[in-house]
Picture (cartoon, chains in turn orange, cyan):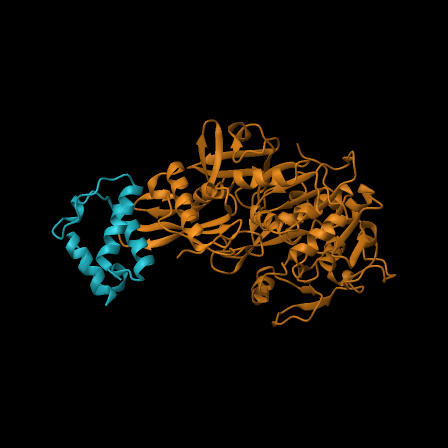
Length: 463
Length: 81
C-alpha cells in the first residue's frame, strides 16, 4: 500500500513535530531537528543551487546531515559521497552525476569541474533562514556502492523510495533514540537517519575518526534504544569492552549474513533487547526483517511480505518494491532492474525444512573440483565454535581441485601455541561433522584481527 | 627436515580425517591406488605447503604430475632443494 511520503525532509521534520528530538555526533555536536532545518548552513548559497546537480562531499557527518536536510527539495540531484571513500573518485562521480557543484567542508584534494560550495559545520550560530521553495522539487538521491572495477556505482533513489517502509505519524509508546554503526551516507545509515527525521526520534551518529569506545559511550549516555549495524560491526563491538555501554531495546543487523552465533551472542549480551535481522541493500532497499532470532528466514516470507514482491530465481533472491532504487547513473551502466522490475540481489539461498538460508554471494562462490562452496556458510559453522570470535573463509588455488577453501580465525581469547594446535584440530573436526568434505577448510590459521571495510563488511580477498 | 616422514604423516593424517583406508606407502605404490581421492590430495598439497614452505605444483610452468608415491616424494625433495 503506498504511503504518503513527505514532500521534502524539512516538511517531514515539521510534520513529525519532535521538538525535543536531537541529532548527536560525538560529545561536541548536538542540535535539534528543527534547528537543523531552520538555520542556513550553506552560507546563503542554497538559492544558487536550485535545480542543480550537487555532490555532497563534506567529511563531517553533522554538516552533511544539515546539508541533506536543506538541499532536499531544492536541488535536482544530490549525490552522497561517503567520507571513507577515496577522494580520487570525486572527478568520476561528479562527471557521472553531471555535477554543477560540490558541497564540502574542506578544500578538495583533486581538480573537479564544478563549483565548490562550503558548508558550515556548526549549528546554532547562524541567523539566516535557509532557502526554501513553496513547492519542493523531487530531488534525486544518489548513493554510492562499491563496484567491481574499483570505481563506485551511482545508485538512484528518491525520498519516496528511501522512506517507503517508514510509517509516518506513528507515535512511539516510549521515546526512541536511534543509532547506527553505519555512516549516514551509506544506505544502512541513511535509512535509519531518515526514519529518525521522519518520526521525530533522536539519533546518535558515528563518524569516521571516532573510536568504537567513544561512539558506544556517547550512544550509552544519550540512552540509545534502537541501534543497527552489520554482523561484522557487532562482532567487533562484542569483542571490545565497550558493548556494555549501551542497553538497547532493539538491536538490528543488516548488510551481511546474520549467522546463528552472532544472534546468540547478541541475545546473551543484551537480554532485554528485541533482536532482528533485516535483508536490505542499496539497490534493493529494505526487503524484509526477521525477528525470530534464527538465521535465515521462513519460506512464507516470499508470499507474505506486505508491499514487497520477493522471488527466488536460480537460487538467487530477487526483490521488487517501491523501496528499490530506479537505476544506475552513467551511460554504460548495467540495468539495475530486470524486465519485470525486480532487482537481482546476487544473494544465494538454500531451502531447508521450510526455511531459506542465505548462503553467500553468487559471485563469491569457490569452485572446489566442480563443487560449489559459499565461504559464508563455512564461516557460519566455524563461528558456532565457542572459542571463535569471527572468521573469514577464502579460496586458495590448488593444482588438483582448482581451488580449496582455507580459513582465518580470530579467537575469543588468546591461547598458548600448544592449545592453539588443539583448538585448530577441534574446529576442523567440528567442521567435518557439519559440512561436506569439500567445504571443510584445508588449513586454518589464527589471526589477531580481520579487515572490516568502511561499509562495515568483511573484506574478502582470495589467496 | 625429513621430507619423506612429513609426507607420510600428512597422508596418514588426511586419510584419517577423510575416513579413507590408506594402502602401505611404498615407493612403487601408484597414487591412484593409495586410497586417497583428489580432494585428499588437494588437502595434502596445502598442508605440505604450510609444513615445508614449498608447493612444487605451482613452482614450475611445465609440471609433470607424479604417478607413484616415490615420484611424489622425489617431486617435493627436488622442489625443496
